Image (cartoon, rainbow, N blue to C red; front, side, top):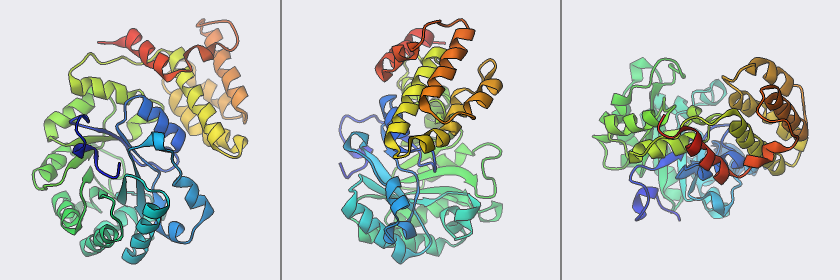
Length: 355
């Protein structure tokens, strides 16, 4: 596609984006979110240095298939020349639909190398990075920013203007500073202020945990799109709920436990198939198991059991045993009843529309 979703006739007026998230937005989860209604997905954020050094592990983060499009590759780094070279290599080798620059990651190991939100301490550097990347690729270049490095440097409008003037064709704002990390509430009024100051589209990000949150963000900020991150953890159906709310349709309720587990197993099976080492895939999937089982009766005990196993088949057996003990069903293998995401979508609507 090599263009932004706003430029395609027939696309939703307010597209929904799956945020780039390390260890979360791998291909299996991206595909699942697309099937539940995400209009655009992004890869995990990838080190520019790893890309230019042709690091094998880094290259794995860049893999995607055409059925994941539209997709953006997000890169991070603090050296304009390295970022430009990385963007050129990504364009030539992987041909995503756009290249996104990470100016928002608050993680210490990224910031200490001046990457992610560390760049926000020097807006001149921000501008030089965007200009270098935009000059190195014919793809649209976009940026994801925070409101500042700390309260003293908090000025999302100034940061967004620097990005747009340097060549960014879309700016996503998470209205917290790096010092805020994920504490407190995202200041959505800053999204509105940025949108009123830029000619390029502004995407809102932060504290969207329900379909109603998505609708409120659009209505209160006027943002051109909505990026969902932590709210999607263990809940890819949030995209379906958000689209319904944005369209003014009845919002599907939360899935029952059997449906939730079936979606979880589809995710787990796809993750195991995607990873060369199935045992490693199960270990890395444990964080998703924690999210999928959050808030259910006896969830803590269930997680303790799940975190000790290392085989996808065992995961299925443990979840089925839990459902039997809850009186949901008694036969083995019945999680397959809802392995189709289409069936799960239908069941979501049946179980909770309009709640």
